[in-house]
Structure formats: structure tokens, C-alpha cells
Amino acid sequence: MENNCLYICVPCYKEEEVLPETAKRLKAKVASLMDAGKIALDSKVVFINDGSTDRTWEIICRLHEEDKLFCGINLSRNRGHQNALLAGLMTAKEYADMIISMDADLQDDIDAVDAMVDRYLEGYDVVYGVRSSRETDTFFKRFTAEAFYKFMKMMGADVVFNHADYRLMSKRALEGLSEFTEVNLFLRGLVPQVGFKSTSVTYERHERFAGESKYPLKKMLAFALEGITSFSVKPIRLVTMLGLTIAAISVLFLIWSIVVKVTGNSVDGWSSLMASIWLMGGLQIFCIGMIGEYVGKIYMETKQRPRYIIEQFLHD
Ligand code: UDP
Ligand code: MG
Image (tube, rainbow, N blue to C red; front, side, top):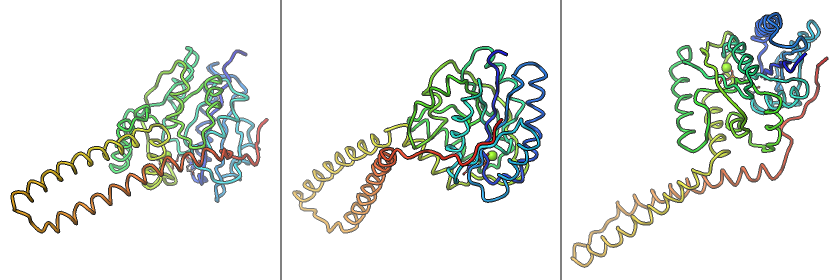
């Protein structure tokens, strides 16, 4: 067979409620692609258990027993979505020609898989899944998520708008990705850096059919900060500009106070003094924090810690 072995990688964290249904739907999808002769018969679905504390791994083991289409990777502990996904991609690239990553909740329409495979067969190395609308998300989720992409762009991190981690990558694109050794992982920022011919397919995003989001606001904010500080030094530059601007303004104030003194209208400016002390104090702490973010990143990178550890790999 030519190069059309497909592996679908699905990171799972506490997904016992959705896994059986997800497996069923993925199996039907893969079977229809095999029937159409678009993908090789040894294509597989890989579930990566990201240190779940519920029955997720048991379910994956059972699925593997019942049907060799399903494979499983058990991580030694919870490492977060991005690391779990990377573990899956790096393991699967040894076997597959093309790999699609998607979430376990199937919020991303699996029918887009057909279009992705078609694009791959046409010769694209990277195919981004892009959401056409977010109508089924709550207003809050939609608003925060869209603000996230806009903010990322403003801050100089180049990401594909409304694209999450639903994408197809070819084997050689993944070989490229494996050359990036950074510990602070932000895959959707990294993939465009790999290069190769890319395109996108659009799809509708659905509601989670069971279970709840593992990305509450707190994690989303942490993720946004991760994305920005991993991909751009713009915030540091902004801090520098801020410092310069404030310094310039303070010179104007100095001139003004001298003028006031000379003209004899000297006032006991206690309140303005207090206000400026607080303003400056706040700004300084903020700027130090901003720089600290980067120093922290450097610290983490220098340690060169493994990004994931695989405890068990079910595959045959
Ligand atoms: N996930 C993971 N590790 C984590 C958190 C989430 O592997 O620590 C997986 C989760 O099982 C799902 C995907 O990442 O397959 C996306 O999570 P979720 O659907 O909760 O995020 P949302 O769609 O709400 O942004
Ligand atoms: Mg989801």
C-alpha cells in the first residue's frame, strides 16, 4: 500500500463518560475511510490517558482487547493536554504516514476528517481544522476564546484563528516538530513554525455530549499566558516602552513643579504625591512580574526535563 496509514491521536483526561461513544463514532469513521480506500487497513486510533483518576485507562484497555484498531498510551501522571498530545504524536509518527489529533469529547466534527485526508492525499503536509462558528458554546466561553485569539495576535504570537488542536500532520511535518525541544509547549503556535505546505478545512463545533470541560477559565488564562510568553518577546518590549513613556512624563511634571514653585503658587500636593507613588509602585511590580515570566521560562527550559513519560503502550 502507498503512504496512507492514518493514526488518530486522542488525549483523554477523566473522559470515562465520553470514551465509549467516542470510540464507537471513530471506529465508524475509520471503517468508512478504509472502505473508500482512502486510508490503509492498518490505520489506528490512539487514546492517550493523561493520568486520569477515573476509569479512563480501564476503558482504553478494554477497547484495545476488543478491537485492535484501538491503541492506548498510558502516561505516568497528568501532564496536561499539550504534553499528552505530544506523547501521542511522537509515538504514532513511528507507524503512521498522517496523524490527526482531536479531543476526546468530539466537539470538533469528525466528519472533517474526510476533508483532511483528502487534502493530505492532494499533497498537503499540515491541514488545520478551523471552526466556522461557536454558536453551541456558551456566550462566556465564546467570548473568552475569541478574545484569546485576538489577544494572542496582538501580543505577537502567530496562531491560526479559531483553530484548536484539531489538525492533520504528515509524518515529515511531525519529524520536523520533534526537532523542537522546548518544554513550554504550545503546539498550535509551534506547528506553523515547522513550515511545509499547509491548508485548512472548516467545520462546525458541537457541544460536549457528556462530561464537562477540563479547561475552566483559570486554565484558559494560564494557557494564553503560556502561548504569549512562549512565542513572543513583545510584552517585554511593551514594558520597556512603558518605562520610557513614564520617565518622559515625569520630566514634564518636574518642569511643571518648578514653574509652580517659581510663580509662588506652591501647594501642599499630598494627594497627587500619593497617587503617583501608588501608580509607580503598581507599574514596577507589574513589570518585574512580566520579566519574571520569561526568567521562569528560561529556568524551566534549562532543566531540560522530559515532557512526558510513557508507562505503558498498547499497540499491535
Ligand atoms: N485533556 C488532557 N489533559 C488535561 C486536560 C484535558 O489530556 O489535563 C484533554 C481532554 O480529555 C480533552 C482535551 O484535552 O480530550 C480538551 O479538553 P476539554 O474538552 O476539557 O477542553 P475544551 O474543549 O473545553 O477547551
Ligand atoms: Mg472540549
